Length: 310
Image (cartoon, rainbow, N blue to C red; front, side, top):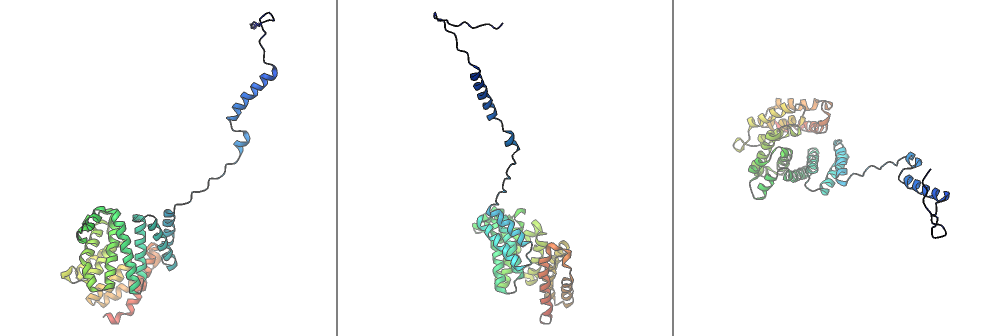
């Protein structure tokens, strides 16, 4: 039998109060409630979860993405304008950020290629060069420090390493093309700096922009006398290398016809180069189709000027 607990009687010993059934029931319910409060109810567990909304892209990332989509359709002038606007917004969000500045430099260079009037073309080339310089300052701090302390751009170019190759090329190209549209005196003034920048870019990445450094140096050297670092042989070497690296690039063919073939007064070469460009199937290289389409238009223009050039 369970042991009984002594109680006090009326003579000084009192009987201990025993909790009734109702009291025990309330205690049990309270304990159960405490346990259940820590567990999800069946209804809550089965309730469908609300979908978490996708995070809104930050303004910089959104501008880059918008610009990339538009630049993929850069052959359409409206889409090119949209790309330029988006990349400009991105550079405003993060001034000097190389991924934004390089995109802007490429887009401005493409705009310049498509401009027929010298004024707008020169402005676009200058804008491309400025964006490339901002990128290069981040990508090649030793180059930026050398420029800021007054070192000649020609010698400062040697301080650029591989990460800055494209920016250095775009800077050199923009300076070159802007000077060409300004006049021969301007071209001679930038000669040493531009040749050094393009040569260093070719050393670091000669394939950038479909062998762009060789294409640019070929056209530049064809316009310079041998004593100034130019001449037919030097120009031909660059054009040959450009064709070997980027056989489907038409800009190099058109540049060779416009500069070297005219310099040598080689009408047969002029006709052959322009004929190759005009007959090229743009579908062979869709990624370069916008640039090649511009080259084909320029080939048509040069063909119409043949009697004046020869």
